[in-house]
Length: 209
Length: 135
Image 1 (spheres, rainbow over the protein chains, first blue to last red):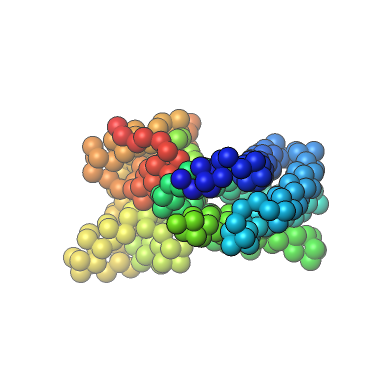
Image 2 (spheres, rainbow over the protein chains, first blue to last red; image 1 turned 90 degrees about the horizontal axis):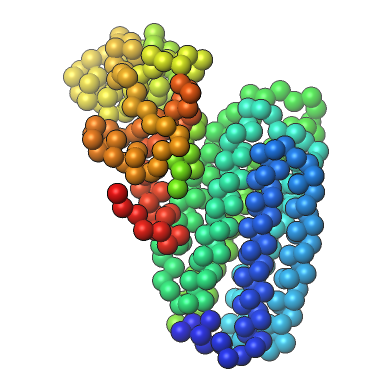
């Protein structure tokens, strides 16, 4: 049926869909690394996230080039590229969050909830990967999308608690406060971007019908 | 799926001497439906007050919430489950005792709470991941 079967005999399309899957797999790996870096307070792991982001940039460029070099029908190309860009936006936000972590250690009061958000972000990435696989098979994405929305809602709930706790923390100077605010903002914003990417998978799914 | 993955870890406490009005105020401010009565530093003697308790046991009976102490309204003891327990264990406990939330405890401390909504969400996520869910 859909992308997977539709283009299974065409090498170009096969290569693109495989690279897109690898792109999401790399995102899962980056989220795992970031979660571990928060759990073990390990800055060495935080430094690996920007490396993964650069690797993801290379994959994104390859995918876009392959698509416009003739893979897939022209009407599908912008939507496929948009999906890849949305996944790339998740990488960018994750990288920014990891970079802030290098300069600003987490207050004990926020640590537990931040680790929970990082874990939920990872679970969302895993579900995005499952959703992508389902889209290739032409399956109904409704249940997957709902699962992703639930994760996003859960992170939103944690976000309000984090902001409330953050307001009680004393900071030494303006920049320490600003970095902490940005860290929480970015960390909790990752789920929004993953949800955007998942919504776009639905657009792709519908446009194939 | 472990309970710890979808439980709510942010537990709100209120002192036993606080009034039920204080309880309501905190529920509104924090947008929550239950509060643990007791201190987070203590390991036992905790009770729980839910929005349902406030509505049926206080407001519906015309009792002034500012004249009733939280401790008088709290249900004790808390229904606790081990943090290594499974989703289905929590579900079973809820069904058996006809309760809407189960506290996840670890070494005497409350680590989190799992509500019926959390269970529903967890089941939907498992379905999305392609897992079969049943007891």
